Length: 80
Image (cartoon, rainbow, N blue to C red; front, top):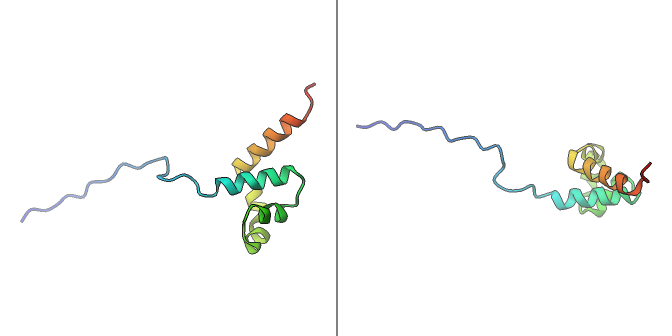
């Protein structure tokens, strides 16, 4: 009887599917740039009330949200 060897699959550094929350994260950043509170911005971006309340400050620290906020600040700030 022949034995089958296990062949390791190559690891992929890029996920198979894109992040499903990209649109929500962009909406959060836009709402924050408008001056909304964190919880209200997340509620407007279609997050649940419990997630908005519990995870709001963690979500704002995400790199994609920080980059959107930085880009919007750079556009509104006058060049010196």
